[in-house]
Image 1 (cartoon, rainbow over the protein chains, first blue to last red):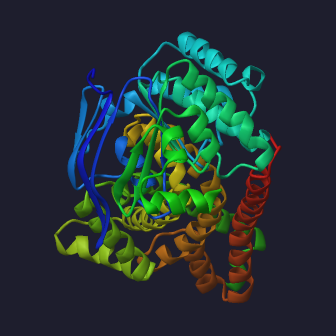
Image 2 (cartoon, rainbow over the protein chains, first blue to last red):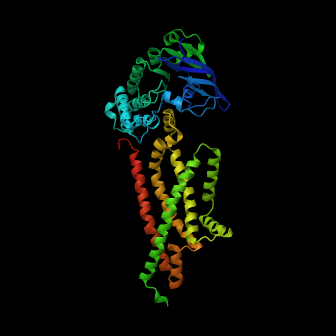
Image 3 (cartoon, helix red, strand yellow):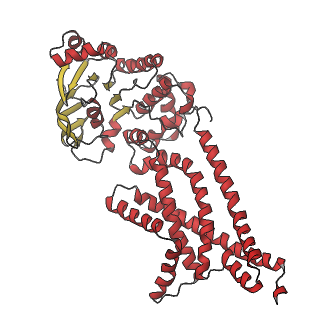
Length: 244
Length: 222
């Protein structure tokens, strides 16, 4: 086994008295497409948000491409440059155009020259199929288009891994596929993806690793097709029965 | 004796007083705005002692009458053996008063920016200062403009209180003219009209800004 791109070791997290992550261990290799599934409250979103430090962990260690994150750590700039994130609510910057949304972080954080930033932004928007929306404002776009801009914005920082937090859950059904198509294309290009998702078919067809979380622990994990076909634990069996 | 002052004399003198009112309002508003930004930054910083002390500062100025604040500055500093001219005490008092209120108004605007904006910018590896500078403040500014202009009306009216410590702005000029002419209703009527002429356009402007920014938040309006 090569060194994992993302290493999660014995991670614990509490919200007050609520022990939401109870010792999570995960290894994610370069190019893995990981789907994290589970009931709401199982800790899947908290785990995802811990990977780039949006949630602080109480114990354990997270390492992404050599950047370590420990309990209580506050300097996250190096780590966050390697980890992109896409949110359920898109979270585009409404006062900036689509192009400016994508260019902002390369310009401000990486101090990339303006001309290069624009070239990167145009390339990323082309990749998500929105090259012609460069000068539009976010509120002129459909939800699916906004989410694709959010993907382009994250890609512009050239992250090693992309975290997707229920990125199709806020979309109208007819807009889900255009976003999933972009994610599928990224997976095919070898991007490492970790996604919390309710799209079970997508998790099975595109993912190469499935993580089922239950009560703050990784209850079962492995090859998605294998797990969906033969869930070993009764909890995963009942979860799959409930979502199908 | 009573006819020593013509109506024109009264208006001319009130005009001079009004000029001081405008000057004091502008001074308090500009300096109070700058101080208010610093108070705001401290009020929303990550350092608990800074946040708490600025909360105390804001509550002190919001929880006591402006008149008492002026008295304390005017007479308090005099106790230290420093002679404070009325204009300085007035400018200082109103500046502090304005800074506390503006900081609180602006804090509300910053906190109105959705959490997702902070999370998205944090995920892009921006520092707190970069998040404020490029993402949060530009959006907060848009919603802050209307209430800020609205508050400027309070500042203009607040300057009237400085007449008590002897600063010869519009109200003080009015009371001197009233004593000299024995025409309090006429003089104070004109004084009130003067404040109205200063404040009403500001109120109208604030209302139009509110409409404009409200509309700007509607989809497809860019």
